[in-house]
Structure formats: C-alpha cells, structure tokens
Length: 264
Length: 339
Image 1 (cartoon, helix red, strand yellow):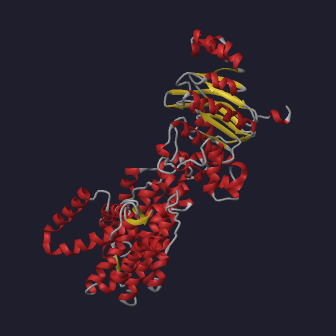
Image 2 (spheres, each protein chain N blue to C red; image 1 turned 60 degrees about the vertical axis):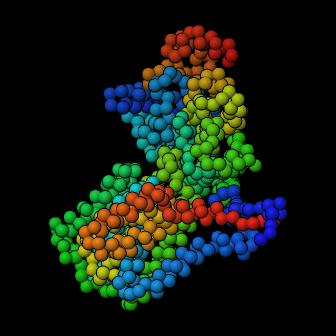
Image 3 (cartoon, rainbow over the protein chains, first blue to last red; image 1 turned 180 degrees about the vertical axis):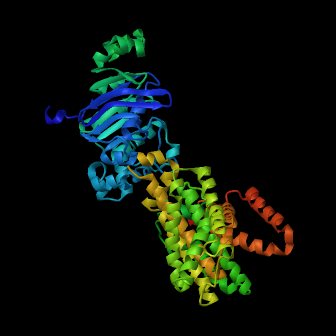
C-alpha cells in the first residue's frame, strides 16, 4: 500500500439497532483521500444512519469508524467535526431566524476554524462577517445582492442546500458527507450544483455523497456503494454497480436501469 | 409652514442611518446621534433619578425591589429568547445568592459590598453545576425541571434544619446607607443590562441564538452545545444571584421564603408585558408590575383579581409587549427632507 492508498475514512463492521430493528448490519467500507464515494439505496436502507454513525450523531451498537487510522467511534459530534469530518443534513438545518451570512459566523467561531482560519484561511485575518460573505459568494450567493443579508427562513431551498455545504466549508473540512444535497432542487439548480461538487473535489476535499439523483451522482462519483435493508449489497464503479443483478432486483426494477444507463 | 410636497418629502429617520445589518449605524449629524441617544439617555437618567423622585423610604424600598425583579427578568429574557432555555429557576438563583451572601457576611464577617460580588460568582457557579444535568432538556421540559429546584431547596433546608432552618440566617449587615443601597443596585442593573445588550450582538451571542434555533447544526459546526448552554446558564444565574445577594442585605435576613415562586413567576409576567427579546422590556415590565402590586394592597384580598386584570389587559391589547411596540413606533418617526 502506498501512502495515498491509506483510507482517510474506514468503516468496519458497523452495526446499529434501534430496539429490535437492525438498521445497519455489519457495514464495512473505506474512502480514499480525494475521491468521491456515492452511497445509494432504496428508502429505509440505512444511508442516513451511516452518516449519523460516522459523524457521532447516534452511537453505533458495534463496529469501528476510523479517520486516518484513528478510532473515532463514540466521540461526540462536535469533536468529530473538529477533526475535519463535516456533514450536511438531508432536512436542512440552517438558523432560520438569522441573516444568511450569520449562519457561517457560528462555524467560523468554532475552535477548529479559529485554528485553521476556515475556508481559504481568511478566518484568522478579517472579521467573521466578511469572511462568511466571501464563502457564500464562492458557493453561489450573489455578493452584491441582498441575498446573503436576508433572513435565512425566507430563502428558497436551493440556497439552503448551498448554505449546508457552506457551513461545512467554513470549518475547512477534510471530508464532507453530503446527505442528499441534490434532493428538492430544480433541474437548473442541480446543474449548477454539479460543477460545485467537482470543484470541491479539485480542492482536495474527500466527499461521501448520499443520493437519489443517480444520473448526477454517477457523473461525479468515483465509486458507488449500494445499501439494502441495512446491508452492503455491492460496491464498485457506476457501470459495475448498474450491471449487478442483485442491485437491479433490490432497487431499480430492470426497466429503470436501462433508462439510467442510456443517460449515464 | 408653506412647503409643498414638490419641495419636501417625509422620510423615516432610522432609514437614513441604518446600515444593511442590525446594530450598525452611520451617523451624519448631531440630530441623528440624538435620535439614537435619546431613548438610552432617558433610561439611564430616569433610573438614576428614581430614588430622588420617590416620596419616602417606603417607596425607595419598593424601587430596590423593582430592581431585584428586573435582574431576574432580564436574566430570564436572555435565557429564554437568546438561548432557548425557559428557566423557572429564578427563585433558586435568588435563594442561592442570598444564602451565600448571608454565610459570607455572618460567618466570615465580610462587609456587604465584598460579600455580594463573591456570593454572586459563587452562587452562579453552584447554580450552573446543579443545572448541568438538565441542560440536554429543551423548552417546556427545562422549565418544569428548573421549577423543581427552588421547591426542592426550600424543603431540603426545612427538613434537615440546616442554614438556620425555617428561621433562616438573621443579623446580616445592611448597606451602609439607603442611598448607597439604591445606587449600588441601580448601577449594577444598568451595567448588567447594557453588558447583556452588547453580549447578544457579539459572535458569542450569535452562538447562543444559534443554539436556540438549531442545536444539531451547532454540533455539526464543531461546537460543544452543552458548554455554551452552561455558559449561558452561568450568565443568567449571575444576574439572579446578584439580585438574591442584594435582597438578603436589604432585608438583613436570608431564609427559605427567598425560594418563593414569586421570584420565578413575576419576572416572566414582566417579560411578557415589557416585550420579550428586548432585554430593556423586562425592566419596564417590572417598573409597572411591582409598584402596581404595591398600590393594589389597599384592595385587600381583591388585589390579585385586579393584578390579573392588568395582566390580561396587557396581553390582549399589547401582546407584543410595551418595548417592542414602542420601538416600532419610535422607528416610524419621520422628518421633512428637501428633495
């Protein structure tokens, strides 16, 4: 194994049960530095539970999560985020009563951002209001409009999804786990989101993307993992995964696969 | 005045000086400066004149009690509207602060002006530690549990007959003179009030508001929510314990009636009347409610009925609170401007 092949994130045999329900049953996978791993699966297959287990929002029943070889299982969410593993929420969690740009002042105020300076390191220099507007501009908020100053509750979904990503970026993350950043967006909003994801990859950020929008996911993902009923079904490149009979049976229904393959 | 709308137009004063974000102003003239300064000056000068305007020692004492409640109300407003912790533990803070100051004064012989600050900090630390287990609770659940604290403390002191039992601790030193008492309390109150207003507009204050809005997102932002909640409770109980310590020296006595629920409930009523989330509103609410309660003593047992009527009246006709209403009206002031 050469240096770059060491996984940045390693999930081994993670199991999570809620009472008698087995949400995750011995899931193992790894993410290499700088790659994009897609996680797909039908509703209720445990995708968000994987995110919650990695980021510490729920406690795993068994198994290990390692970040750069260090065990992070059982650590509280804020400590994991401080190490550089950030996440977005499927149901957006902005601060609705604050102006949009103030949403980023909170992560910029965190110990990690004060040490690293946040995205582009600006957090150490300027005041946090200015830095947060810089980040927002980079992620698609028009700087000279009133959008960054609007109360977050009045913004449309497209901006809120970007705000979720911006909150991660403000921490200068090494890994971003995106829980359905494409869902609920219009076609044109998705079209502008894809280059943004590609740019984050270029910047060297490792991404784990949970998606239902397969076409866009297959555009950006290096590898794809399929979950079904809390178990890992198959893992591989988009083409390999699509060709797998079990995936077809579990998830797509054979006709839809052909439809997706035509466009992919 | 023979101006026409072709030469002059009306303009809201605040529009010209407000910058895009809140709390930032661009002042161009003395007039605009005075527009901003007037309400603040009225508050400060008004509060400082209060003891001199009162007809006698009785009403001066009432004003001290107003300030005691105002500490609690401002603390309640801060915790409830900026951190999302609805605390009914006001009486607990009063009691803890009062007992601490009583012990420091009677056992260790410290003068009131030394005992009060020490009791404030020690009481706030103790209150914060005792409230730590409730911090994961939110909203009404936090309210219910904090309501238990003063009741629990009072029964505990009664049952174990400690800290003077039902008699309380007597023989505390009073303030050296009544004027000093008044101005010490009013000065501290104004200082705390403006410090709070400053605090909620800093980045730390923003974190508090974020905790209220969405604590999961704060966790995802690499921030320890429990730490910031504890810090907020410390700040809130600092106000309460300061009030309790002062109260003990005003009455020259500290006892279990300082855990009375009045101290938990009246600040909330004052916050509702004064305007929640404004921090000054609760003070105004106390300035109305506490003297009203005194004036209504003449009605004997009907006192509570009239008191309730006042409360209902405010809630029906000015449900957003005096301060929120006043602020809105003040911002709507217009001036004539040449075109």
